[in-house]
Amino acid sequence: MFKEFHHAVADPQLPGWQAYVVDQGWDRFTAEDHETWDILHARQTKLLAGRIVARFMEGLELVGLGDGGIPELGRLNAKLEPLSGWRCVAVAGLVPDEAFFAMLAARVFPIGNFIRTRAELDYLEEPDCFHDIFGHVPMLADRRMADAMQRFGETGVTAIAEGRGDHVARLYWHTVEFGLVREEGELRILGAGLASSFGEAAKSLEDPAIERRRFSPEGAVSTPYRHDAMQPLYLVADSMDKVVEALEGPLA
Image (cartoon, rainbow, N blue to C red; front, side):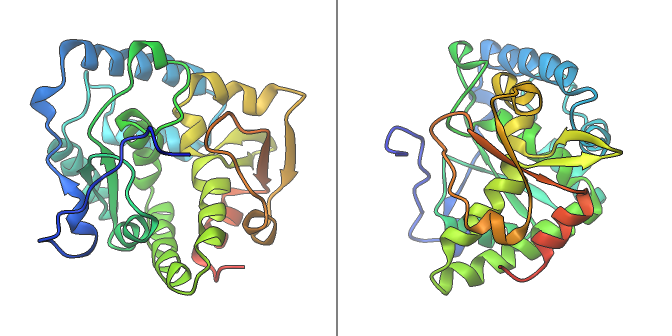
């Protein structure tokens, strides 16, 4: 299913997840690439107002993703690390699950070193640097969510070693990527896949044809998902606390 996506290739001379880290190549981004980021950032920030959890908007302000153009990771890390101890590294595309969860366990988040084209502004199946940075980094600026993500990374490493990689992937998908949550009585976006998608963000909250089920860890690990189309189903957590508890707790 991912055959046309960017895939990271491991450097055999480096150990573990470090083998997938590459230079961001920030200097090779074109003026059009930076303009694409600015278009995406401006319209997504406007769209998400009143639709996403408060912690996301707070983190967005703290890490300064609207300073103009694609963020350079060194400067981004200078803001993020003092807040939560997390840092970002560049990768050339999707990394294997075992490397991905090992990165989370080390408080490292992988960022694709490419950005979508203008033709893909509304929806992109493949995670690019806008999805990775705009969608994920604001929540990593929140200390409680940051700690939960590290713990979840540790759980993921163990689960994959035990042959339960599908379980941990499903829990991640239905919370961190495409989760919804109730906040102050209102339905809000949590997941990065929704936060970074102009085409799917509002749809996830407002389309009456979409199925929304109450979130539970047990339900999440038994619910398949699609990564080649907009989601037909979303899981809705009762609160952010429920999400954090699920990420920090034992795998169902």
